[in-house]
Length: 274
Image 1 (cartoon, helix red, strand yellow):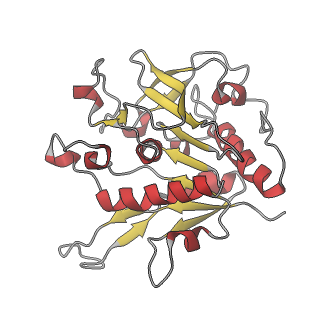
Image 2 (cartoon, rainbow, N blue to C red):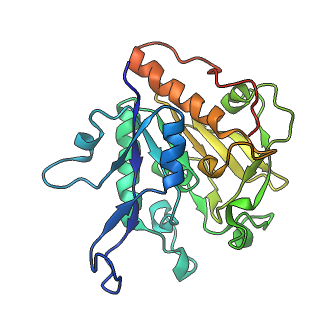
């Protein structure tokens, strides 16, 4: 069987008449660590543009086996029924609409979805959930989850929910595991069909969610994490091995391609700590 092809949602540089390169043009891009992470798992990443030229978003997803939502800019609070409390929290409404449509199409077509950081938030809002516009000022615990000076070296421990899929993927791991933290927004009310898989310690911010809506027919798979597994280097002590998470997602993808049930714990390697 050929390598799985993963559509990667694009980050946007919107048209800027003051930019030296591609003046006044919209640029779509991917952060290279994300692409390298997916390729290290054996997948072929393919950047998905916004639909145009007579093609629809569904056309762009034709031939794609799964969808990965990158991190990046804030979501617009207007997409979950709120006004931005500060101008800098206005977000990127155009990117929101583009990504939420991809999520809905993939769930309808039973194509697995993995959301990273902003991607977990997109998944939540696409399913009717809401966000804290800023964890440090609006969450009851008021803790910092993004420190710009140290960026992806900032982190915290998480508590994995009992009976969760994340717990099965990382079976035997000595608690509490640690993840990086590069987000200032977070999940508030859960979207339809989402269940919590992990929370941060000690403030209880939602760190991982899984789509688990009961219904007739096939059950689409979607997963979201607030940390950045693609930023975790091999051999980095104490952090969750990013390849275990990716293997779990790719098992969902390859099982659907092969028409079989996914394995509960895909084989990666003995060590589950990077």
